[in-house]
Image (cartoon, rainbow, N blue to C red; front, top):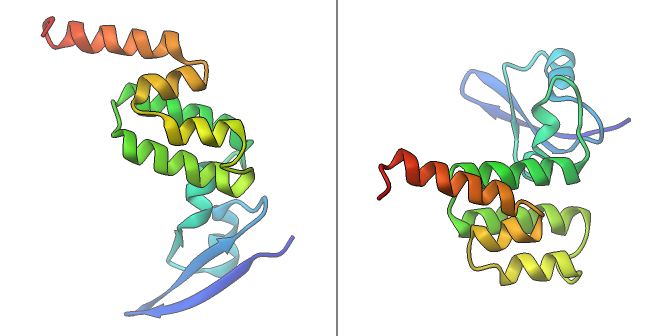
Amino acid sequence: MYAFIRLLPSTGSISYVLEYIPATPLLTVLDVSSASSIMAARGALWNASIFSSKGLVPWEDVKKEYVRKCILWDNDIKSTKHTLKEMIMHYSSLELPEGKAVIKSDNLEDIARLYGEERYYQLCLENRFQHNGGN
């Protein structure tokens, strides 16, 4: 298991930028490197489970949980689509049906339908409506 790690000197400390770390938890890199901090950009966008102490989770599971969080917090559709497209481009292709459907999505309801989360979307919508006093 190898990782490409670029060292960037910064004021008083050394940061490690992780370009690609297959199946290596970030905590291991911290332990081995004795760095004070780690910055994970693309790897975190592609599969946020790199932060999990339990190790990597399959990207499909991460993607589904991301969609649920977007629905729960009424995330901006542009941001949601951007992150989903980044995940899909890294592991698959935007030219496949899933990628095309994400691109064509106009709102979170479309995303919920695409990922089989229609019921969860409706539940969140109802709870949001009740919490806001029916407004």
